[in-house]
Image (tube, rainbow, N blue to C red; front, side, top):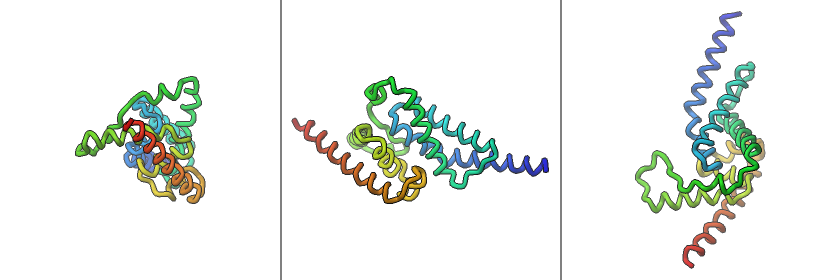
Length: 180
């Protein structure tokens, strides 16, 4: 019986490390897009994995690691934002620019536009910003997003449609201001 527990513990550790390797970068990108602060995003992702490890250490199992990790990340984000309520949104969004990693061939103009588009996400309400981020930054399918957020695919589709529509409105307003 002792070796059975040891084998299970080793398997849990291997599964955890695989989940970390497969998801850490995507979780960081998602988190960074939402908080716009690299160090804070790193801390939140680290807390996500700590909570996940603690969950597994209690002997609980995870059927869908990616969905579980995104759900845990969202919970950590909510907890962090509650703690930082006294901070103004302006202070969290002061960092400008967005440097997508792994795409060095993008022009400076394209990078700047991407940064401005991501910055516009901060003007969406939380429900819409989350689904837009998961769909277009994390490249998740609607079904995956629904699973992570524990809502129907229809709810995700509606939020995505409305979020994108609002972003287009914000982009047009931004362009009109630039021309003035």
